[in-house]
Length: 444
Image 1 (tube, helix red, strand yellow):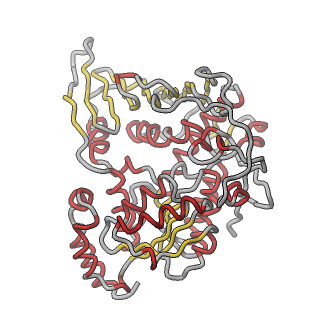
Image 2 (cartoon, one colour):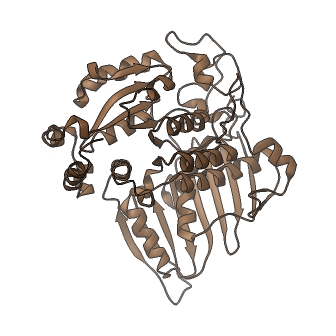
Image 3 (tube, one colour):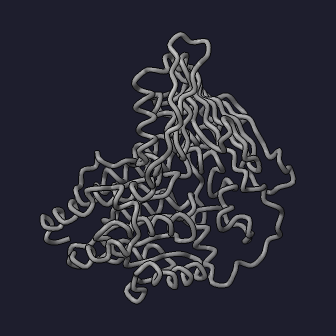
């Protein structure tokens, strides 16, 4: 990008108020975008555009100076649909290239940054490929689909010195920060228990469907990538792929990385001493999904216990909310979720703490994208809201819970060696197996 000093001045002036940038659509900023020379714009490409990849694109295009140049998806039906939707986003589709193979997108020299919105089992390979190609990266959560993948991704970011932001956008929401600031002020007193829950009432267990041919326009072999070769099954494809171990980790890694993340931030915690988990497909034992529809996990830390709980098909969770984090202290309980936070007093305490409900006031995803673009421009890596190291840490914690569930064991973690004390568990679960000629990336 040329004319860098002029560009930074223009960008800082245009994005001085993050709430302003988050509150208005693309039309509001059209006049400002037209004042930025094409050579000064940030050109982005998106890999995986069926779900969050598309939401991420719409958010980043609200940032002045960002220009879409390429889309990539293995499903031509999705790709054609998205190309047709570009006009409604004030994007000239004739200037956007479309690909089925992410490597072709990464070969485009004009691409400065990429958004990765593919299923979890592709995150590591595509993030490493992007870094090697000299692109900055916004990668959806969870960072990796195994503990080993997370480590490889951290190594790649350091070697190639690229900006890598993970899609844990709650880290950019003001009310989450406000709640943590209150927590760290110490008014709750000693906190011995932290409860985290996710009740997904809008989703039911998936029913059995037979194997079939892949839909026309779908490059199914490309979709599988490093995952085990299996016949096409609609249950294992768009969205519901997350309920199968080959591709993802269920609700524990889908929502857990968001919510458990703030449990650790609030407690200033690192890694647990032990992990245990129980659960199963209790809502519908005949469902073919592999990840549990009901699960509880217990993480034991030095001075507190962290409890995770999730269900599918039930909406009424603890504290009358479908999801949240509760820090239970001697003087009160701080309850935090995406819509706001509050503190409920402890009746038995002489030093009661209470805060009336404070609602969310901003758009976390929009602000997260603003932060990503800002750091690309400044190269100040320490200003990222969710760096690859931070994303790796919580992805590993979520993987620990899943591994405890899958082994049926209480597992102990060696924080010095950064692995379980059970070598058989390490051998089987630390790295995701790669198939079809794919190999875990090696960072030389």
